[in-house]
Length: 98
Image (cartoon, rainbow, N blue to C red; front, side, top):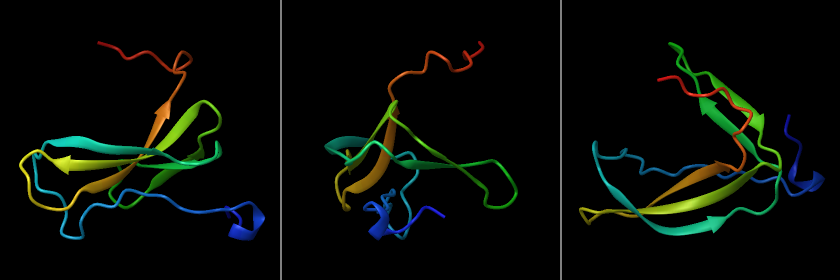
């Protein structure tokens, strides 16, 4: 549905936690931030359903995408790489109540 790599350089980036999972309540420090090329990304968010449901959407020009490498403050283990999308303009979003 997204096309192919021959139709404009399609490639995937996602978070890469260790296969065994992450320890609970772990604190991390940002080790490196790498911008992802282009301005047309698809972001997918998990939704709260009793089964796997994802909401995916094009991010457009009002976002920037990055690969962020995180290192545990406790030491040990390999760095964790996560995909991050930063929204540059949230002025039209529904305000948070509270």
